[in-house]
Image 1 (tube, rainbow, N blue to C red):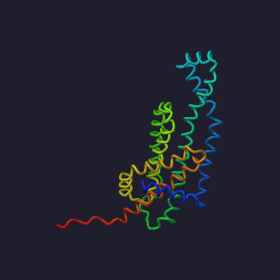
Image 2: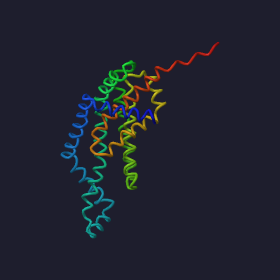
Image 3: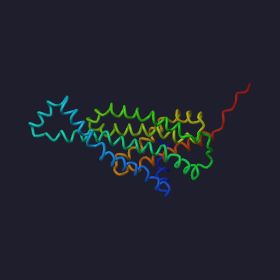
Image 4: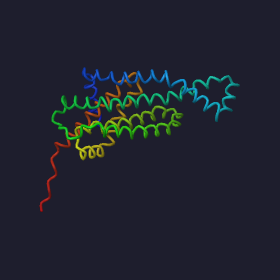
Length: 249
């Protein structure tokens, strides 16, 4: 836990650097464009389809009863609520993907130059491993998120369930992206395996900011900084550790 909190604290300090503050513009602009396009192209068709699917189909009898009870407005706000539950994570996934592909390399080079100059680059400069990992993670996130939507009906879980999935996606994507350029493949696999739980814990600490508007605009870049600090520190420790002595014949 101490290593996780240290990485999180250092990420906040790094976030205040002018270069990293400037990097916040990227996910903010992406999220803004996402919401504009959603409102213009997707929102009305999606809510109309949901209303027809729900209240003209398997809940038609319930809707008739609701109209008689003066609750006909549920045809408007229930589809809107469901659409919001689908659109908000899509916006988060888009921001994480943009940061992982475009911002993470800048974050890692910034941290390596300022805070970890002794950590040599032994990984690949190719973005393909990160992109492939992202393409695998997004469908798993979407399936898990949709399957656990009914749990939102239990009041405490309405906050816990999305927090868990945001954290899972962040850990899955950023632990690889924070290592792929600096760690050799065997180093990366060893660190991911050894610190898997701490990576998830770090993601849960950072993703908790999503529950506090408007801090969710900071979370993608701050997550990249936190994972960068954590991964480079663990990699530096691993390389500095003495090699095991060979047994005497």
